[in-house]
Length: 423
Ligand SMILES: C[S@@+](CC[C@H](N)C(=O)[O-])C[C@H]1O[C@@H](n2cnc3c(N)ncnc32)[C@H](O)[C@@H]1O
Image (cartoon, rainbow, N blue to C red; front, side, top):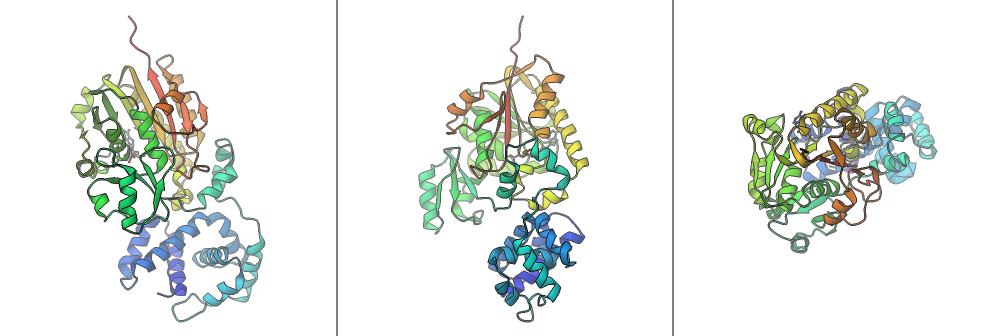
């Protein structure tokens, strides 16, 4: 496909997404199935363009409002203008050949000129701006960060290998990687690429996992004694369970998720990784009440800390959904607390940057269970986990990873300690 034909494809996909909003990765996959002539490089270039447009959806919308250009076309035009910082090369691409988008009209040209010099609107849902402002120290920096593509981080499986060996294997494939932030097991790729078909992935030597997500697992499992018991109550596909099991191999890991189908890959992933994780039945789960040394709640959340990876979700998120999630988080925290033994830890994590889903959830939990849980000394846990420079603590026992400085997802974690039994 020519560069112009790729732009035309991105226009078609975005127009369809605008008219029928939904998950963009599925939309891109469907498009690929219907257009078999498109090669892998074409599909990757089209996806990059579509994601770039979605990361700038609100700011680029200005172009569309100024000139009534259809949404798909306006966003791709804006993306091309951002890429070239100049109208002439963009004007050459539009209208070039039979598969290209139509040539720019006079009104589109004048809207494009104005767009090149206008100050962009913040790429964050307007209704959620007040929450962002009250949640993070520098909202503009976070928004700017989420306009960029996220790096690709790997977790090297310390049960099977070590980072230096993986760096060499990657080099042999023509792929450069270096030590990533936070966890010593984290490698960051210079250029993101798909690794799921490679031998190092298939044989369980690596997992694809954001650096902050890895760090949450390291904190949660830090210092677990042999034989001690961890329940991952919202295990999903098991990213955190696998990382925890790798750093405390003598401990026992139990995984549960209300949606059992989400855990279907966990068994094969654990087998590949050589990790021991038991997916529990509801009967077994009952028997764990009050007995777990650690319980991790990797809570269902807005995912607002990952909106650079999933920019479509940013524009589909609603006020009603936020209220629903806050309610769900409170219920799952209360439920999780019943599994923690006296003296054990309750670990709560989200990939959200919103205070309502993070510090506020912990404050409200503490108010519902007064005197039962207290924040742990997170500084000490952080140092023992070997996570390097300490991120600022946002409240006692709570830490927010720094998505701007460390280019990670915006994770939050709180660790609470259950009061020991008193006579
Ligand atoms: C953020 S995802 C978990 C991701 C996973 N821990 C990982 O690292 O790959 C949240 C999960 O919580 C599950 N969930 C939601 N409500 C729950 C509940 N009340 N009890 C258990 N799991 C729940 C969802 O099905 C979803 O899989």
